[in-house]
Length: 307
View 1 (cartoon, rainbow, N blue to C red):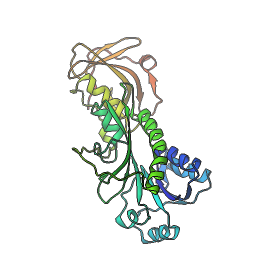
View 2 (cartoon, rainbow, N blue to C red):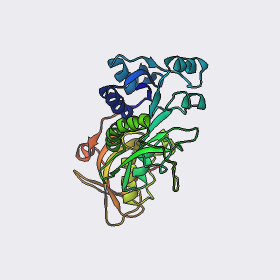
View 3 (cartoon, rainbow, N blue to C red):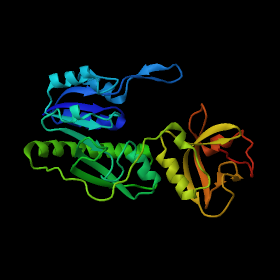
View 4 (cartoon, rainbow, N blue to C red):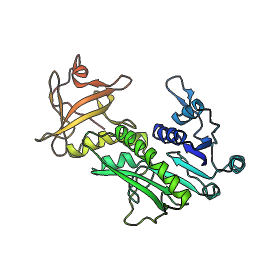
């Protein structure tokens, strides 16, 4: 099938590779413009652009997809269908209805649950036991188009947004091939979404701030859902630290207060229960296991994490 592929982050790389491996003709890849990154603020290409260039595919990087020049370029390509996976911009009707077979979106939730930009993060934060991937035909709403195929997976207590995203990327890649084949043959029929919708709004850097009044179980889910980005953070000894991994404990202690700071354990009170911090990242430093972090630091019982 003649395709144009829209995608940006690591989540979208495997579906692109799968399309190429299945023999589909990817005529162009559309991705976000290069962004400044790191301390040197050097322009950095996104993972999908890197993969497209490695595979010799034409890359288009419009600042805005509504640009007339970009839409004319798509018309000249004349794809049979478009595939969209975590692209990062809302497509206008002029693009959605341009391909003969429409635009197929890979969405990392079981629609209509968790429509929006951050379904993986919010499913973990909210304590869902399962999630999955939906392929859908895009319309002009926010992830409101009819569903083509779905597949679910369980969410484990150890899943982070990073690990779950990788698993959902694989599921989405595998689901994409029968979706396109069935859409072309007519064997896969678009089914309107039913049931109560929920939403997964875009996360911002400051959304990672830890509210210690939450229960220990909620805090662990929050930490996992914010990993790797934007990261769950708090302030200790006047410096920002990201908490990378923690487990809940029974018992009571004052929320945000260090109850125990031994050679290899750091236990902090929560709104209900206690939190044992296993991995932490001081500002500007690499991730450390808690034993390494505690060496040389004079943390004492009664010290507080603050907002």
